[in-house]
Figure 1 (tube, helix red, strand yellow):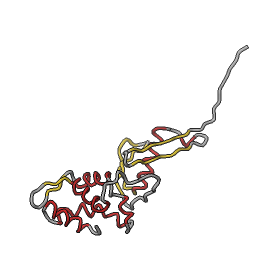
Figure 2 (cartoon, helix red, strand yellow):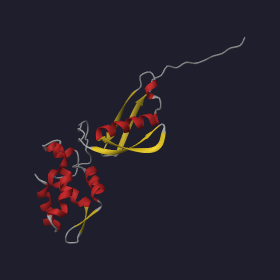
Figure 3 (cartoon, rainbow, N blue to C red):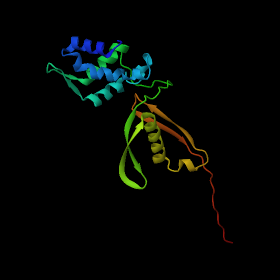
Length: 180
């Protein structure tokens, strides 16, 4: 479907209520058209994780103007099925890279000299970069001080997992002392 209004109208026919009961969820799914005005925008939210994100943002249920209560997930599932015919398992598939949307999100940061949590507004890309450095430091402290460590992070949205493969290089020395 070409417009959130048409998605909402199809749900009015299916479950009753008004277009206004559903339009916010449909606008959220299609908001990525601001970044990519063609079908590629669907890679950002038109998948299983996107449906659960909508539930987190809009709540588990929507109360229609008729008083009927509908699970938000149903609305998201219907939107994705109307656009794609099925529900993909994740935003990234195989080796396909997806550009980050140009959005800022809150990020809770800790610094070495202050035990208080500092809230920052960062771009999504900066948050992902900061998280990777945090994970790297937590698992391999001092990684930046050795003899050429290397590795790779793999973000698997469908498995809800971030995988780190880390190869550490270092110069070794052994001390031997002998008294004769």
